[in-house]
Length: 240
Image 1 (cartoon, helix red, strand yellow):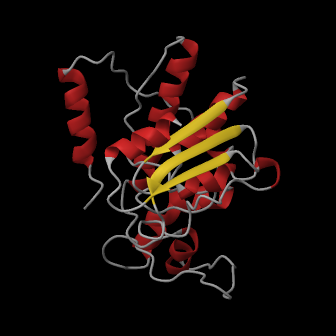
Image 2 (cartoon, helix red, strand yellow; image 1 turned 90 degrees about the horizontal axis):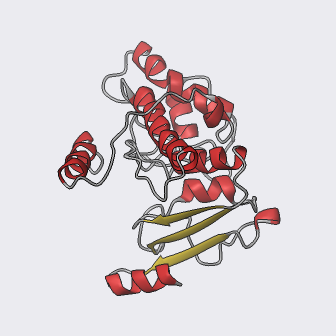
Image 3 (cartoon, helix red, strand yellow; image 1 turned 30 degrees about the vertical axis):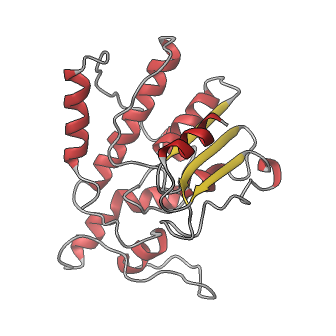
């Protein structure tokens, strides 16, 4: 209910009506940029999940019903019901016919924007991605996210000679997936302004003392905001 195709349509219509700039179609970048960031088994799961789910005779969309919780086995199940739970972080995100195709094209939109920015020497670009990506971790989907578009683009910049890359994530929900991917890396700076995880999804990621690990120590900055925080405070944190 919170993530629908109409969002992209509304944004695109407004971009065109306001004549904000050239609108270009995405091109295909294949799987190499995805596999540079995401677990191979996870990607194969996303590619095949709907077909496996449909073959069982289950009705409706594939939705996780169980997870490898604390002190349980971390083995990957063979049956699709278990695999959906293994690779999922939350139950609001379902997989249906066309999910993989949409996620694949969404990452192409992000990469097309990155390529346009770099090779045409542009100051800025807006990539209209749907589904979104910042909750997608190295090997997990959730929060309506399947592939981490921003992280894939950041890695693409690094692979194309850009030494300093920064992801600034402004969203009421913390980008746990982006943090997860770069948490032990020093070459991509991750900055997030978001609702405090004590009160807001995803609840278990985004605290201020999460600053990176090993080589990535100091390359993650979290600014969690309490409920009711006014817009001015968000702006002050962004300026800082």
